[in-house]
Length: 417
Ligand SMILES: NC(=O)c1ccc[n+]([C@@H]2O[C@H](COP(=O)([O-])OP(=O)(O)OC[C@H]3O[C@@H](n4cnc5c(N)ncnc54)[C@H](OP(=O)(O)O)[C@@H]3O)[C@@H](O)[C@H]2O)c1
Image (cartoon, rainbow, N blue to C red; front, side, top):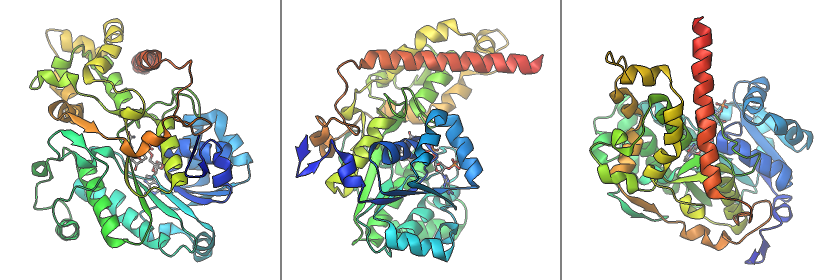
């Protein structure tokens, strides 16, 4: 499929002319992008910023995509740079920075602390300030065509439900908000909760998007907003995901572990919320969309959401896990149902704060910017293979989560012997 003279089914024709600086390349989305950039798009060169050490990065890849990392590194087109997005100039030497300034044509910034439990101050330190500093650095790159900031569709969680468009929703003065947060040194005087954000993480994504555009009006910024990342359909391999970075899988794992069998147990206050979509996109489709938008030359906010795959409601996700919840009996389940109830359901429900928010607000994320790619085939294709059965994909994901819970329960029994 050819749109605007770019052959989307032949990504190598585009990426062979591009040198990418990728952050977060050991993460769930970043490693999938690295696989695609190196092995499917024949990118001229990929600099991957890894933190700690090369050995640490290799350990991460060994855990998430053991069978693929050697092939990626063997291309000779991937260079690992040890650094840290929180450090000045990424913690890189001036010589390396000069090389990047001369060579890099595309920055893909995936690195982030994705914890929903981090404080506002820590989230600003880990996610907002490094993004602004990287954009500043990239502004000096001589041949930069695009700066991709991986944000989240949940950056607009303050909206009261309904359509969420691929645009910036202005709230308070972003510069003043950042200054106020930095001034207090820890928690700000304003209450993030009151602004409708359930977590500092989503609030800070919203703030960072706006600051990026305000501070860098001449930079070609693509604000790439996935909803939840789900396990891969096929690349690097079926059900690939970094442990802990696929929230709906994690939710299912916890539902099985805690013995949750119905939506009512998760959201007693919002019984109708189960009918809302728990928006998720397989990570390889998200990676494809990001790269297709780079090829297209898109700027501004773009969603990667279930509309580009198959929307599934909270009730359906709970139902996927329910048969396993009945079969797998964990210590927590037994305690919960015993008269002595050591761990109450409330503990489990805290984990579902964000899902509860989804159950309260029926958001419909637009994928208008990506519809043009629906029929694109090839290595970055959005067109699903005729043999792909989404119901089977969801059922097998549930089975894998049940196996994980069983294995963890077995491991904790063994460690107590
Ligand atoms: N997961 C989701 O459902 C989801 C949904 C929407 C948007 N997003 C966004 O998508 C992006 C990628 O998320 P993900 O799920 O792939 O995250 P992830 O699996 O947790 O990976 C995070 C990556 O960032 C790196 N990193 C963290 N702090 C760093 C630092 N100070 N310096 C250098 N690298 C650092 C990590 O390195 P280590 O390997 O050393 O830890 C890892 O490579 C993030 O911006 C996230 O907010 C994620």
